[in-house]
Length: 193
Image: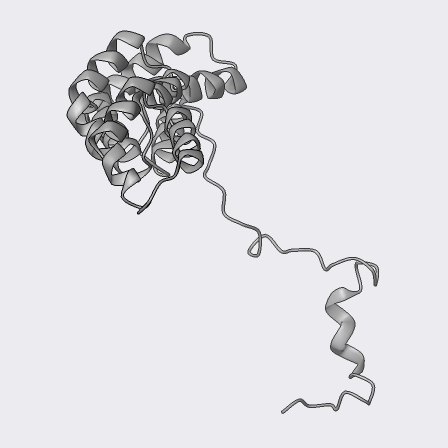
């Protein structure tokens, strides 16, 4: 229950804390009300480490992504000797297990192939954007997205179509090729059906 009804005027001291600002603007925040920001350290290595850990807190990242983020932050800070600091931070993150490109690459390929039903051409294109070498990508794709696993994914995708007429077959064929599967593999899966 309020001390004064809505229809009546509020008490005189009610607006006292808002005197310093105009009626159209919000009241000023006291130092206790302002959001807590991480303190800016004078130690550049500590700042870059906290940036890397904050960046990794959202999702697992590839080493190249973290390096790019740290280079960007080093430029913001105006650091002269950033490559050695970044290499030290990356080495410590790899040692502690926060960065593991091989595990992440396997996980990425398996999740895109099995869950998202994306083929190796699509996966390769997206992995290149993360800054991985083509040799690493091709080796991982050969290992984790081999022909039998691709055929299993295509068969699984085709199961949702009970009957396929010629027009539907052409559309599904285009869709699967657009998802990154080779045309010969898609045709082989259709022939098995």
